Amino acid sequence: MLLPLAIAAIFALPVKWFLALLAVILLGGSWEYVRLAGFSGHAGGYLPVLVQAVILVTLFIYADQWDSGILTYLYIICAAWLLMFIRLPLYRPGTAVDNNYRLVSFVTAIVSVTTGWFAVCWLRTQTDGSWLILLLLLIVWAADTGAYFTGRTFGKKKLAPHISPGKTRAGLLGGLVSGPLVALLAASLMPLEKVAPVTLVMISLVTVLASVGGDLMISLHKRTSGFKDSSNLLPGHGGILDRLDSLLAAAPFFALSWVVLGA
Image 1 (cartoon, rainbow, N blue to C red):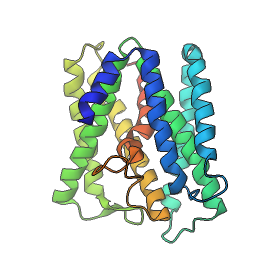
Image 2 (cartoon, one colour):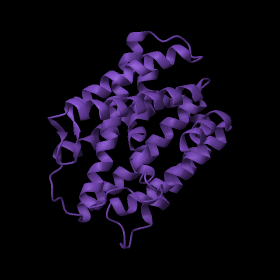
Image 3 (tube, rainbow, N blue to C red):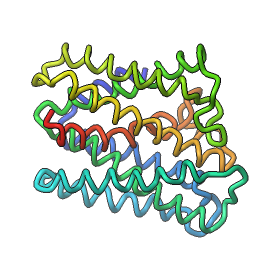
Image 4 (cartoon, rainbow, N blue to C red):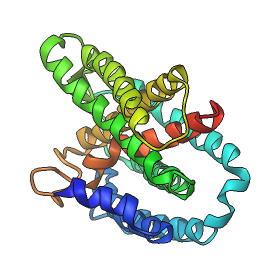
């Protein structure tokens, strides 16, 4: 049900409407971060959503100027994600939901939602933007599917046992294989300018690794705050962040790789 709607939004909506719709959806993700970041029942509970709304509206207003400094923006964005990823190896079970956790998680929430929205929306503003977003989604979905089946079949060693016990090193390798393979097949069928296979594989590998980091980041928050899902907004599927965690991290790295490698 959600997949056809997502594809329709990517291809049928005018650019401005797509940007606005994605902003509204991700503001729902910001609301989910309120409890994941330990702000539920806290005096500053509404702050993450309010700050996020102001940032997205401001970026939306200046969307026509994004291209002028896009490479710089994407470098800064990806550097910010790499800094956030440092939390993953440093995480230890029993982390307290204290003011330090709330502050770091508040920054993580703002940065992850803002940068994920910006990267996807910038891709949409490009000439073949809808196809680029579809390619990005296919890489992320293929990696997730490949990781699931490979992990179930061969997975023994855990990838991040304290954060997400279900993820295995074999699953990661499976995702690193399935993502590029699907990207090569999909790109050959899309009306995109030809991309060298080696270049596309490199872009896919970077994208897959980032998507895994994004997934683990949300898992870290859920494990610390004691929630199974980011919310119950989508019955049987969890919340918005459960569905888009990989994409939020993958989109900036996909976009940067696409620009830097001249794809």
